[in-house]
Length: 258
Image 1 (tube, rainbow, N blue to C red):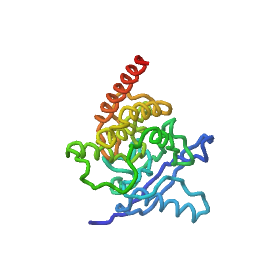
Image 2: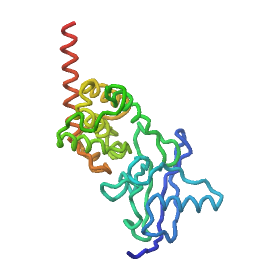
Image 3: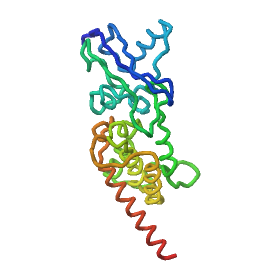
Image 4: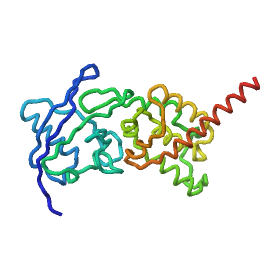
């Protein structure tokens, strides 16, 4: 495969901190390989800035393998960029033409305040997980893998939901800044398995109500599904909503008996 070099113009959001108003700054990157990843291109730019005695651009990254979910950029108005089912770290410069202008912004959501430049605080996701993302399990040694029989369709469905990497693209793409796809994926993952049945309805209730403290409401735009790098279906939202309604019905019946 040929390795073409191209010149790119970058319009990048710079912001010193949560209280700063922020602004766009324009940079030029010359002769970047089309085989370079998007984050490698930003590394290259930062090396240039440091060499010139300027402050490097802050952006989130870790595994660079589409697993950890820390890479979180709006690229030309699209969460993770123009390639579907791809995290920012998996995007390559061959997707852009030489001379192209690329606008790079952080996630734009009230629940994700900007820390600096392109890095945002996604700890609201942590609060949701803390509220119910666990199962009751006996202590002791690990059980045999086949101790609890799980039908393959159930296991496949749980694995599809477990694919969520918590990147926040669903929130950034949603016009309402809703986190229903993320929250529902975490709920559906555990609620579909035998191990998750003990807390099933309590989990749905607590996680959804914690989500509502930080994020907007879902109105079924479907942008979350389109932006998700792991192609998680919005069907999980319907499943989580059904469990939430059942949880409220159970609470109502319990209160009526008191």
